[in-house]
Image (cartoon, rainbow, N blue to C red):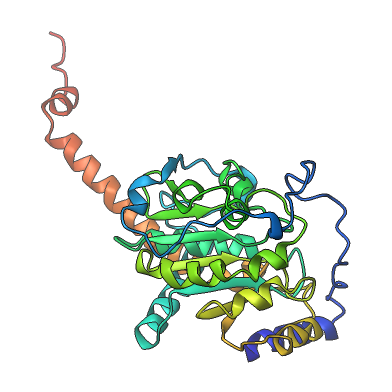
Length: 322
């Protein structure tokens, strides 16, 4: 974390730090045009999450069809440098999991527009690429949810619908077809997100779901603009803080960390690093490695062509005319 602070200090000293974004958003969140749901006091009984037998067999599947602007990791393109960075993060988290109880992780940031949803989605994706590593990605940002837009599926039913008794767990969980990734959208817009998060059912759900999933990754609102992330951090085993280089200030990071009720920060994800600074050495190694792979495949294809009868016939020298 000290290296991130050093980078932020250098940006401030060189005048490269942009002012932190304002709390007022210029565009309404997705689904904001729909009327908000009634307060939590009018909710019906919530399904008991202690009974999870056969839950995963009941969930519906959604196709892998991410939005082009989402910049989500594709397992079919393993040589991208950002993919390798998230794999490195995955390796460190999986190692920590062998040292301590670690299954639920909340991904947040100090301020908006720092890339927390991008980081949460891609971390969940790389975890799900491991065989048998069931991963659940939950959108707990009830104020400005975005995960359903990244993966291009319906926002409802979701978490708010479950907590207000309008849907069951099996109805709100979606599985990305052919993968180990499961996603829970935010659900219907509500007027009282913090009150919903204070319900005992949230804590029970977070305690029970690790019996089904090895990793549960939460996206949440920024810490300095809502108390939601601070509350959800108390339900989780660890917290990852996303900072955007060139935008996040040291003061914002310090206030976010000092305001946490439960200090379980696992580390900091530095977002928006310049490709030349972050990937120069890796890109050289990557180019060399994949260049060797391409040359090897070319040699193998050439050998196959030489051994084929059609190729032998085509290469025979025609006899000269008499």
